[in-house]
Length: 125
Image 1: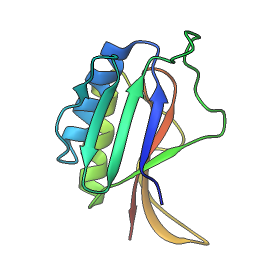
Image 2: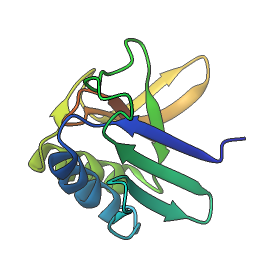
Image 3: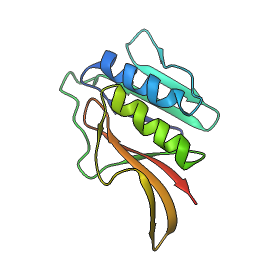
Image 4: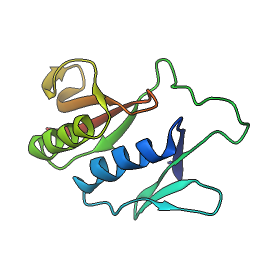
């Protein structure tokens, strides 16, 4: 359904460091910066990118928005979360772990990136 996701970043260097470490836990290579300063993470299933806003205004996080990333196991999700926390991210929501609800059992781990965007690692059990 999605071709790509791009998030605004207030400090592109801090955000690149954060996402490089975070995505390394998923086997995704470091981001590639283009001549416009945007950073792209390319995979076979889609593209994730970060950029300073092109309108020159400050980057802001979507209130109520979350971007989810698939992980292969709770252990990979824990590594993802730890890498994010060690590289400028902050934990949010409940602690990483398995939760059971109307949609079944899922492993979830939530972070806010250096610009405040909420992201999640998810594994459907």
